[in-house]
Amino acid sequence: MIQLCERCYAPVDAATERVYRLSHIESADAAGEVTWREAVVHVAACAPAGTVVPAGRWAA
Ligand SMILES: [Zn+2]
Image (tube, rainbow, N blue to C red; front, side, top):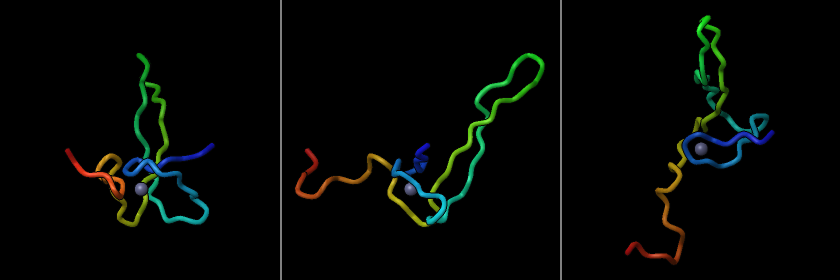
C-alpha cells in the first residue's frame, strides 16, 4: 500500500522519511465501536497540495 502525505499528497516511504502518524475516526456504529483510519504527514515542511505553480506557468 502506498501512503500519501496528507499535506502535499506526495508518496511517503515511512521506512526512510520522517513522518507524523495520525489517526482519524472514520466512523462509529450505534454501539460506539470506532473504525480508525491511519494517515501520515511529513515532519519536514512540505508545500500544501495545490499551492505550487509549475515552473513556466503563470497565474491568470
Ligand atoms: Zn508532505
